[in-house]
Image (tube, rainbow, N blue to C red; front, side):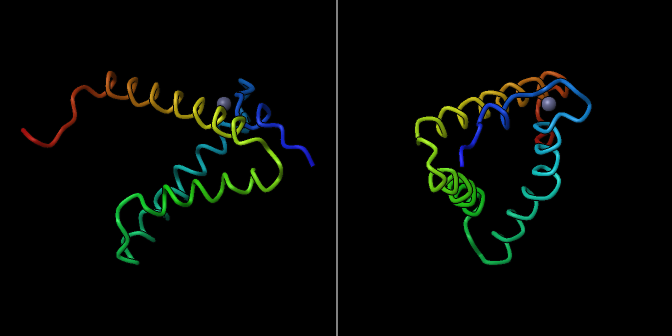
Length: 99
Ligand SMILES: [Zn+2]
């Protein structure tokens, strides 16, 4: 079975874009669940997030996808996330809390 990384990483610009829908699910369900598992199990913050991400990506390696392709896809996604963080900070102004 071949895995088409482009198909699952490139936005199709529709209202039903599978990339946007996947990111919504991850943000709403997976990210808070990982944080809760870390807290409940007394694990360091982001340990489930990091190892979970690596294990999930490991499944791609098991499918025979080349590591370079996985790393390139991940790098592209992280670029997008960094860009989003910058945009959010511009929109929301400086971080709140130390005033
Ligand atoms: Zn999209």
